[in-house]
View 1 (tube, rainbow, N blue to C red):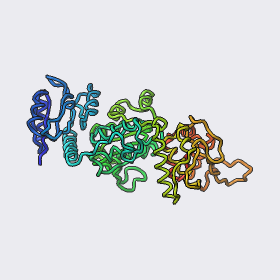
View 2: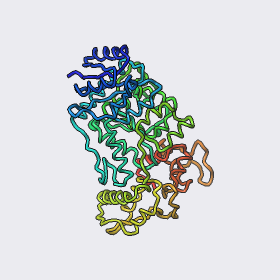
View 3: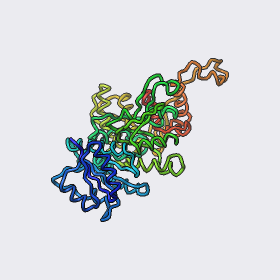
View 4: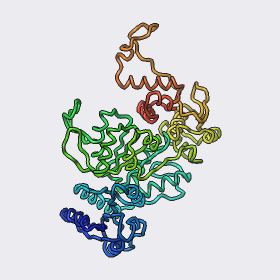
Length: 473
């Protein structure tokens, strides 16, 4: 069945150009030159896609998005057409529910790809519409909590899940930014497609482009086979770019082009491939500060920050902290074969006394350790202390009680080892682990300070510790 497209454009030559390209691809096309004509057309006929110019003779194109769809017609997918100078208004349209926006002049292939993807999105929406979150629910797609702050998060995720608008998730380390990306995917009509996550801070600069966009065999030393890359692997689904502010400026340019054209070009290849993905990105830095310092491109930031989603720290979530602790207690109790009746009175009090600088991740590790190390029917823990370590102030970041593993030495233990012998016999992963553990020990267990010394983000260290099955507190 042909896709029906309504072109709302007051320039006859531009409208005819769009119409010719769409009709040659087999689409059914109608044209409206004014806001009034567009309203009448939408009330009269069902359209799969509306190609909407914002500057119309009798009003603002955004009024079509603000108004209610005709009761007898399914809502179409809106694609905004804008000039460079009105990008901010295009972003406003995305926040009102538009599927995507195109910047004039529009390449023919980009126009056809966007219209096709918008039509497919509309068909998926009409088949299954995800349920909106309830105001008093205790959780949402993996999240646990019913605080007002989290209800706002749930409502935002539910309202934008089916848009193609890029979501920029911010929040402190350990607040659940990847979980937010997974929730956006699960709540969307793309839920049956792939969800691909990539940590931009954990992959060396010279490999990140290949990880994102793929490469062909022989493109560089070590490219022994073709690789499709994360963007192509996520085709039809969601691509999550974690620690986006860690990306090098050179690759930021290529990411911007990918977002603007919806196409990729593998390293070593001249072939351009269309890709239909929804982008969600995250950082625990202040992206505006990164832009101001010149470490992050301003145009890329505005292209990514269409839907901002800020996750609250655990200290601002009230009784959620107890709900989450009880959830982890039940989960880890089952894993360890312990029958637990609940949290001890002292533990419940400690939950609200700590500021939980490591957020949910710190709470999770604290509860896990208490389950493993404790005994008796009630679970007891002290989030401010670890075995053999003094108590730390509430405002201090999450700490770990661990000494670095000694590096093997080829020399007499009473003499300093030569620099070239210090890591002899160790793999690269062992060297990395030793460096991380040594930095944490130097900082007396302070993960955030250790991350600053190593010039990486705290979440990178947390991921490494999780990979090595080491407690991060």
